[in-house]
Structure formats: structure tokens, C-alpha cells
Amino acid sequence: MDYAAARKVMVDSQVRVNDVTDRAVQAAMLAVPRERFVPADRAFAAYAEVEVEIAAGRKLMLARDLSKLLQNLDAREGETVLAVAAPYAAAVLARMGLTVTAQESDAAVFEVAGAALAEAGVQTVVAPLTQPAAGDWDIIISEGAVAARPEAWIAALKIGGRLVVVERPGAAGKAVLYVRGAAGVSRRELFDAHPDVLAELTPEPTFAL
Image (cartoon, rainbow, N blue to C red; front, side, top):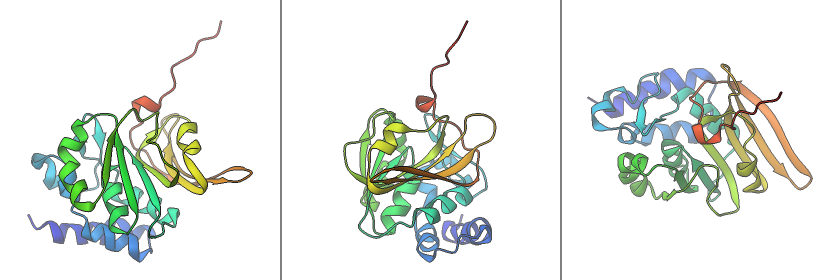
């Protein structure tokens, strides 16, 4: 399979046509080998409009959705990024010149994607997703959805830091941008999206009599 050609088709048919005009995002997605973030027997599907499983239930976000998240970040070269359950996004942002750490709760994900991340210059951390890696982050991004506002992630942002994630409390999901300011946090809804919800970020059910 000609993966370079498949990447071009993906960017042309899934990214550009969805109003993603940021040339840095386009160029990075053209360069990063998405097929290396899934097991070899699933590499053929890496550029299709499906959420291919990486390992341990973790999946690649649709290229359309990820590119729109990236465009709304207004990422700048040299900024620091924590990519939570987002190994492919981590490599794309590293290609754009940012300093990236990828965090996963299951090392099996890095058994699949670790070599590609290392080549991209991405640091890796295995820790619960509810506990963001220590740092003062300019950007936090996730390819998985959360069921509720991720307070711990927001708290890990520096002033002026941005978080992009899909919030999916039910069947429908909405990509949102949080910006942490000196006086509080702003939230802006971006577009509809429906990736799987990260189990660790799902609140325990409560019952009332």
C-alpha cells in the first residue's frame, strides 16, 4: 500500500474539505505516518474514515475531528503540550514544532505507537488519565471523549493555556475549547464529534432516594 498517497487522499478528502485551512496542520498530517499508530494488521485502515483501535480500547480519532481540534488550538512553535490518550495527535503537534509529552494509562498503547513517538521526539508517560503529568502546560489535547468537564486537566494548564477535548455526557458529543485566564476559565463549543468516552474520565453513578 502506498501510505504517502493515502495520507494525501486523507488530507484532501477529510481535512481540507472540512474548512481546515491551517497549512501547518495540513503539512504535519501529510508528514506523520498515521499507519504506525495502529497494529500492523490494521495499518490498511489507518487512513479510512473509521476510528481504528490502537490497543487496550484506545482508538485513533477521525482525521476530520482531530484536524479541527488542532486548528482551533492556534498552536505555536515551542509551546508545551500534554497529549492525553492522543498518541497520533502528539506526533502531529511535535511535527509542528511543539514540545510534546504523551500520557497513557495502559503501556500497551506505547507498545504499538512508542517507536513512532520516539522518532517524533515525543516523551511518554504511563499514569492514570485522571492525574495529568506534572507540568505547566500551554496545551492539553485528547483524542478520546470525556463524560464531564475535566477539571484536573484544566487545572494543569498555565495561564493562557488551552484544552481541546470532546465532551460527551450522552449519545451526542461536542468538541470544546477551554482557555485558562488569570480570572477564570472560558469555554467555547466548536463542532459535533462522537469519539468513545474515556472510561477513566467517566464519573461514578450516584443514586438518590
